Image (cartoon, rainbow, N blue to C red):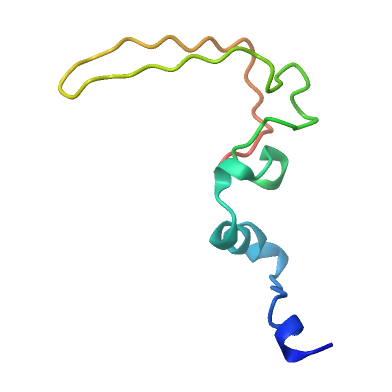
Length: 81
């Protein structure tokens, strides 16, 4: 294996895995079971898919816009950074 190829590998101890991962990948792209925020293709939340409707809310500067977020269940075992 060439030095160039070796330089492409990153090793991290178990205690530094999430911290090291987030240096290269944003938390919004990492599934929640690995400490990230992505739930798009997560087996832990099969009721939520990318086919579900989404809403875009544009809030102009110096204004307020009420936003209702409905939560049906709280899972305290989920670790979100």
